[in-house]
Image (cartoon, rainbow, N blue to C red; front, side):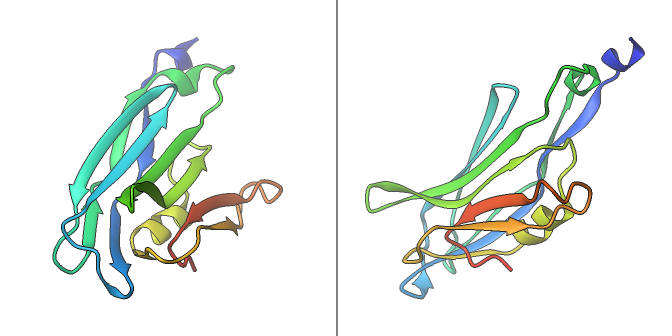
Amino acid sequence: MLGMLKKYTIELCPEVNGKLTYNNLPFHNKTVTRSLTYNDDEIVEKCVTSLDGTFTFPAKSIKSRLPGNVLHETVIRQIIFTEFQDQELLIWFANQREIYTPEIFIQLMSNLEGELTNDEQVYEFENIEFSASPFRASSICLLK
């Protein structure tokens, strides 16, 4: 019962640092959008790429009592995209199933470098805690 009264810190997204290029030239003065969804609540933030194509978003966390409910399943959706040739181009998409950000996401999102001519790829990364459930991300960035 006491667990339902406690407020937990939900790490929606780590700090994001990225750089966008188009034909290897900086994709500057363009809007980048980050959409974070947790329990049907969405937070949308926007920034504009600098002259060298870089962009950044601060880490984002919220407080919630939901993780104290044994019936609650944590799912955080992270989407980062930009408009390109009248389409939404996916820079990053992942679902996070913990209230804390996996270390691999922190590492990857600290240096997202995307060439807009790249095809979107789906990546799988080892989940040390639950090896049967790897982390997945979709991106135009070359994730290593």
